[in-house]
Image (cartoon, rainbow, N blue to C red; front, side, top):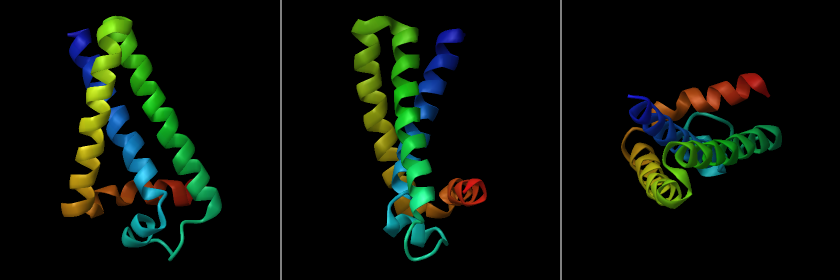
Length: 107
């Protein structure tokens, strides 16, 4: 059971990390209802949050399966997470609006 929860946490961190990195780009920021350009502070927060979530996914994968398989698991999950963000931006971009609004309220 704890392995399944850790795997879900790795997947969630990878997806949310790439979602934050994607929303920090002007094209996606504008598409999600923001201004023409992502504000500098929001961009910095989103990129920092994205990289921290990807690092958290790596740490969780290493905790779950050790260095040998954990690094392979992380590489696979990062690929799947990136593809899922691409699919979300292509078909259901409005699902990522809460990420942009959260950063707007924080900044």
